[in-house]
Length: 69
Length: 395
Image (cartoon, chains in turn cyan, orange):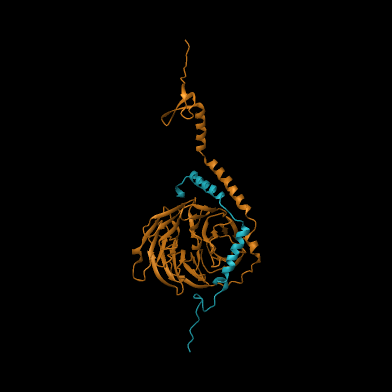
């Protein structure tokens, strides 16, 4: 547990981690950014909070008052 | 008479290099060792290397961090908001409080939606965990925990149980029964045991396993039936405040954020920390995976929210404004990932355009800090919990 470890042990743990990370494979942002954007665009059409939901379909919108005829 | 001092030197094969040389008879840990003088010196130098000081470790750590930054910077050829310029901006947002759930006696600390998109579980400082029906605002179940500050609660995927925990250092699972008269507390099952407070918990894809994070700096995966620890995750150097599982299609990873300003991505099966990000300037209060699973967002006490791309291995967006000076306590994405909802300690909820990096709306309504924000499973609404003892549903 982090609280029980001495400063030296914590540093050693961080060091091991950094050594692993320096060698992780990475992709350029110019590749990943358009992919994120494509994903969002694709799904935006179905996103109720963006598209808006018609009053009668949305379970959370207030229902109208009763009309007594 | 002369004083003659004799130094007896043994001559023979050295224990280490086996050469015939004058040997120095020394004792190491009460064992006689016969090394030649060259080997003794070598041994003394190795001893120094083994006795690494904090300074040498820190220096090595700094150089590696520098190298890591260099590697990451090489791939930072464009900004997300630059690529997003050609997208049309979002229209005006009209989001209002549709329901206010009142009933907690004290600060609401955490909430979770059920997969049926209608039920909510929330937990509070007064030790109560309440299950609500969000459509009707009725309370369906209420459990009183033996401790105060129930900081974590989660709904099981089946909708048949809830897990919660806090200052009791444990995560307990309560099966929900349809019989309103049944005492839920009697059926409680203690699953996780940490050595400090439980900050967050989440069921994995089934009711059978729970992932927890704790103030003791670790995260852990538990089997619900037996209470057995399946895997533990060490790597944070301070309290872990939040965790989030990757969306099921992308595999067995989760992200955690803590008071050491780091957000770590872990492999659930091996327990290995696969990626780590440290760009925040203060505690990370909340982490949330992007719907595609390739990125995650964080909310922090430094008043910013940031988006980290996992494949580019770097931060790609910061959501901040000079006028926002209070920390963000909780973040969540809308269904498509275009909007980021963040609850702040200045009682507001800011809605950010994830791609362009701009704020699209501020939502007022709570009368105290917003502690938790979650979008419903079908994306039609989101719920916020606050220190003003209420939960609000916005749509």
